[in-house]
Amino acid sequence: MQLRRVAATVTAVLAISLIISTTQAHNITHMLAKFPEFSTFNHYLTTTHLAAEINNRQTITVLAVDNDAMSTLLSKHLPMGALKNVLSLHILLDYFGAKKLHQITNGTALAATMFQATGSASGSSGFVNITDLKGGKVGFGAEDNGGKVDATFVKELETIPYNISVIQITKIIPSPEAEAPAPGPSEQNITAVMSAHGCRIFAETLFASPAEQTYNGNLDGGLTVFCPADDAMKGFLPKYKNLTDVGKQALLEYHGVPVYQSMSMLKSNNGPMNTLATDGADKFDFIVQNDGKFVTLKTKIVTAKITDTLIDEQPLAIFVIDKVLQPRELFKAVEAPAPAPAPADDVAESPKGSKKKKHKAPAPAADAPVDSPADSPDEESADATADDSGSGGRSVGVFTVGVGVVVSFLMV
Picture 1: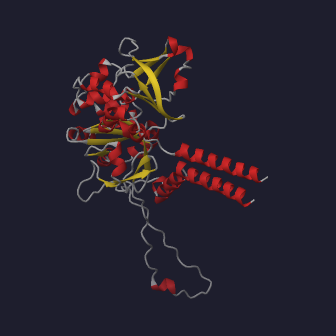
Picture 2: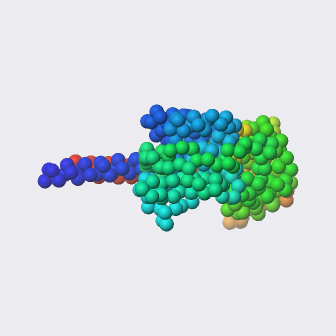
Picture 3: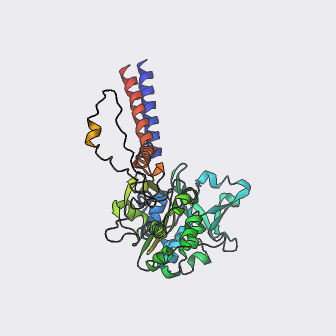
């Protein structure tokens, strides 16, 4: 009987440990640090800010190469932008462990990469072809390299099914487009990049506004853009159309920051952040705040979450957010003025049962800011409540229940 209790207790503890381990975020830098022969690859993942992007993804596969293979790549003396594109081609936006690689349907698969997700790759050049070869080998080749299988699978380094898989391949995968010099910041078409990757409505709205000139004017010196996804922008358009021309420009500029901020910088620089709309007394700022593995942008009206990265290469970063940022300066709640004091003759009314006069508050002025009920501070509270009930809360709840199970077993 006692043996059964011990066995049950051990089983419960192991189950809790497994649950907790699966809720922890992965860290590619720490994972590769265990393998000194991959130190150069690891270093350049950090230098190009790709490490932060990998850590921010829930499902990912990293095709790592050893120091010898990296030395061959570095001997080409590629500019940093092109080097980042080459390495981003080695980051697959799907999970491929050793077992899955040998069980590919029909022996071949086309995997999207982070290079394709940045918008820098044209057509299918951002895809990698994975082929199950004869003799138990698996090959990898860039789609824009004539379908050649240039690198092969060596071994599995570390995995967290089915979140991240880090595997070694024999060499860097050649790609003419990835190795081409990246365009300079002034050559980047910001609206085209956003339009092609889920922010079409915001991009078209920006393109039709003087705010686009403000964005382009800050591009060379450093710019970070937070573009609302199409679903969020579509629902917000009726409110946007009610703004004045000056208000519309201010709202669009509110989604830009006049300095370069990578994902890792956003995670470490929590606090107030000025925007392109900030001008002296007009604050137009928001709060950058970490929420577990995510980064949130908090105004006094809404809290938006960064959901994707389109470009993160100095001096330009473009991130997708799940809500339109609404500055308090444009969406103040209209407060009715306090009622005027009652006249003296109204206070001392002779008949005991007579009714007091009611004073109606005047209607708000026609040019006052128009707000929907969603623009009240209650929306901010709702956002906070929703955020608090996220994955972090579930992890604590699961841990509490698990510990309760263990204590129950021990007390029996």
